[in-house]
Image (tube, rainbow over all chains, first blue to last red; front, side, top):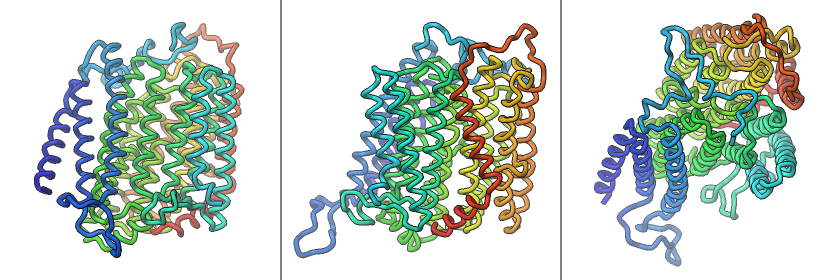
Length: 140
Length: 483
């Protein structure tokens, strides 16, 4: 069982990293979501895996023997909730970004850091992409 | 006084709820936010007083005793950083009342700022590894919201890059926490410290390296700092100052807590690697800053460079190194945030952040020129300002341990820092304005901005003229850590 889980984590991490390194923004977010799933599996493995026994200490005993440790399962639950929120947020951000920038290529996204046009001096920056005074009338 | 231990989280979270409820009434929202941050500041002062009197506020929630329940514990280190957090929150919120690059006033701005404060306060208070991860996530979600609020294309672009690299960091942290729990069966700091000694050295090294890698991404250390200079300069000034002061320092604090307290003494190879990472962080940060002409980008690269100094202090370990870490962190948060705020005032008066497009400010506002020099020269480490004392105690310890290469790198980086600060001063204040028809704005509303920056500068001067108080406190704090 542990070996199967280890292999699952391995393949999930591999797939997640491969997608996260992609230039395609959507694939990148999906890759991060997969990596999150892999992290949850690692956390899950921190409790014992094999036992089907309920995580209750029998009366008269002090220590829980063979059953799985329920704490990592609670931790995984927390991590799933947080991860879900972050994936939702990043998908919304991604939609807005792809809509405004009209591209889904990570290399074309140079609005925050314009490409230098001079070998020595940094670019002066695009006034449309920077804070101005007075503020533009349709500022949200 | 154990109820107080939760205030670094409870007060900002309550403010988040109240300010969210008041989104339709901006004046009320503003008032609630100020009351919230002042309450936070008051509680933080009491927490520091308690910690300094050797009665640190602590509590395990839900009456689950120490190694099982989630515990909060505010020793001297945590309490001092909570106080600085509250101070930064107050300064940023005060600055927001001016019109120096304070951005569009979205109704969710104030709730998110308090959310960041809650995350930072929680991270400094908690004594539980998984809980620390949760506070990192709270900070991440709130800061992502603040990045995207403006809705400008460069802000969306920056928040995506910030999101990807930071998410990778938190996922790594989550995996490392899982592995640590699997190996030791504990998450509570005190219990982990006991269990870590029984671990085989090789396993301890691997676990600690995984944890540190995650924290170093958060701290913006070489070579994982790319997210920081790629994104910070798109933020409105008060938020930028808050992030610059606090977010990376939480990562550094987590590094200090793991190698200097929980897992102390850390394996030699880990500390050696951390020292070289620190030296590289200093050097590459300052080189990035030397290239740029946008004030925000120069200062953002200097965050990275200064993180290197703090990490060097962590890597030197022992009581002296840990005390230097706390001293440097407190000094640095105040100075760094102040520099960003003053840069925003320069932007309002001169019209741009790009040094090639501005000038002539010394004739217009000589006081601002002097005010800028206080944090700028303190960042460089010119005596008698606070940065000099901070660098002195770090480098004294580095020399005492025979770390000549690290010391040399730190000194060279200081000179390059001086270059950057003088570049800003010469270009913004000394030279003539490149546009001959330029007239200073007549309607700038800078009163609250002056109050915030002068307040922070006077705290810097206070540390500069009386470093012994903070140093004694930091040394006592280092003795209560495990290192």
